[in-house]
Amino acid sequence: MYTIFSALLYAIRYAIVALAILVATSFVFAYATHTYPVAVVGGSLIMVSAWDAVSEATEHYENYERRRAGESEINYSLPAYKGLRNDIRRRALLYLIEDKIVAEEGNTFIDGFAIEVSERVEKNIRGSAKQNSAAVARDVYGMDFEDYRMLILFPTARRDFLSRVLQNRGLTLEAVLTEYKIKKSIRVFFTPTP
Image (tube, rainbow, N blue to C red):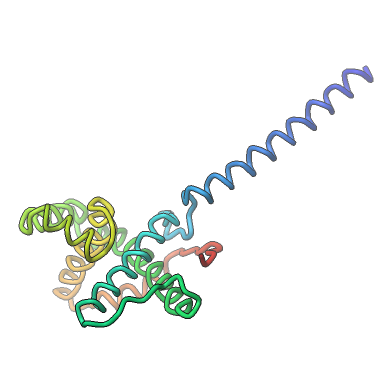
């Protein structure tokens, strides 16, 4: 009896160690590959990869505007610009949170919201030629076309469409977003600054 009991304890101990190693490896993998959530908005996850992509796109866009104005670019990775970089990251996370709210509430306010937005984006891409949109994605935002489509074009189209519908109902998007940011369940997790 004693040997069976000790063998069982021995097996449980190794199972716990193996489980701890598996959990630790999973966390390291998620952190290294940027596949962990930084926020949850009403059940929808915002992944760190999207947050990083929008932050970098904002940095590229601001440097693009500086070049157009004849000013020198900012290297946001320098310590002198840490405050600007943190501000960009805060704005990028807020942008993603608001987009989740707009996507969810758009479906509440408008039947077929997602389909209409998708059609508007595709029409916009066809109207400006995909090559031109790809060049804008690369040159202005520093991202590939698919990320540009999902992280810039779709949120912009959702926001514009919902804004027009709300305006026809005598409401503003800003007022609705303020209300839903208070009402919605929004959880922001630990967000390390790179």
